Image (cartoon, rainbow, N blue to C red; front, side, top):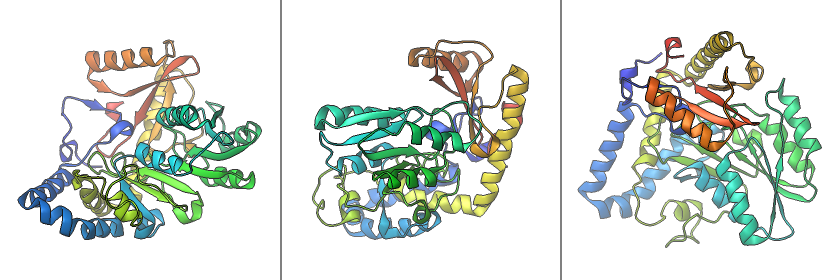
Length: 362
């Protein structure tokens, strides 16, 4: 859809792992350079006088496509930081239970472990089948495995290890019906699958802009329907969402500012066209690999966006160490960058389809 040369990727790399950190177009990197030059030409005037209004203007570009107003979201460096802010703002204690699924992002589980040690709350991990036949299996698994006493649940919208598109709105509704708050980890959502935060109804949401929406690294958004403490306590921590979150101390704001340029870049191509193209390429790649490896797709096509996690045609022990070693071997031997993830005792590969990929890559 777009030539590989529009991105700064090494032309000798077969890049099938956009899901980890994303890839930024040269045009967006050039926009970031212009923001950086403006900053460095007069750092005080830029950071003190201009930055608040510039960030407000960027949010006017980024928030409406998510179904939110600019005043409802704030910038954070990444989804992990946003989830930390959401959960720590709850001031959990020994009477609280934090529920996550076993297909959630590992960093969120580790945050749950840290909160358990620091606050006395309990982390409960709900198993969800994989592979599966449809979204009802997700809902049934969460309903059956719902931990008693859960006060807050974190659900992925697009899961990191398995690449599945979960029925996020229904999971939020389920949590609310059971008297719990619901946070949604939308790290892979902006640019990959549509979302309307108003309709989603989650009590808190985070989403990265550097994965599927082409922003430079360290650009993400957090949304909350509850009072939110910033991840860093600085001068403005009591002065409202934007003042508190947008001044964590001296930092480089250019990824946040260039995120608006990235959105405009994608809109010029067509967001719907990008999503349709990447889904179609992913489907073609899944069919190709499943036929070549004699394996089955992990889920129906409707539960997959621009990523899919497939079983390898041979068994590799399912440990983080084995997965890391296999990723390095694939890279070193073939110059293919692809995610390798341990699931259910074996290693799987997670492929991504981005607008610079072609079926020949797979």
